[in-house]
Length: 286
Image (cartoon, rainbow, N blue to C red; front, top):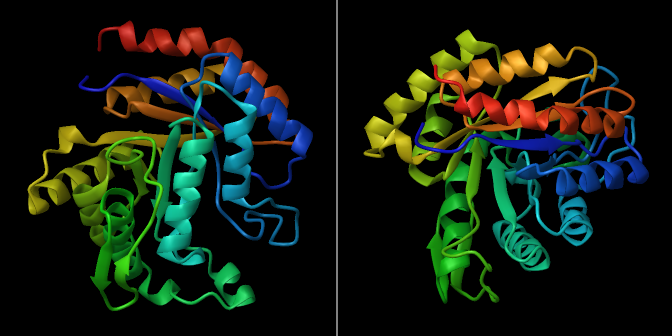
């Protein structure tokens, strides 16, 4: 495998208490996980509808930066339409500095229609084009002294964005993508491609399409790390071990366990107990 097998924990930020979040963050930092994640939604998602409690994803990342000292942190993934590119770039640089250079910058085109409808957020109908422009702009803001950009959706003129990130040239960019156009964007810009999910057969199929997209833009697909998140309710530990082994066999080396259920803090503790066994998967010949 060209990239090491790494594991993360994800607590979404919805239907969860601050105390539970802090417990999850502490477990991730002290138990040896490689990365720690939240999500980016303004209203709750899932079967229970949008009425529940949910915390803002970038504010949580700032808190994660202060509550931890070792584990890398990120948002799986930021909805691009929710923030203007300069706001998002500033948030990212701030969290990178707060964490001492531990930010993983996750971004995607956004998808939740109800959030855009309720809050009057524009851009969902042109979300891929907006993401394309944002990626170009944000990378420039991270690395260049001034940014000038004349696009369909965003315009910058001699824009200054200081300070620059701690990480050079910028924090690793994780892009969530599964459609043909967003896969090409990922092939152009990503350090890590986040696969939307699915069973091993579905993942194998989308990997093939991603490799085709890399060929179309002239990128070596082996340069881009592959990530996936999968749910666990804290019950059957073999479920986690089997899924992890299947995804690793397909070359997915960044694996995030997304804790489901009423007690994500307890589930995080159970995953921590399994972490040494999960890491041994890397040393088992295929």
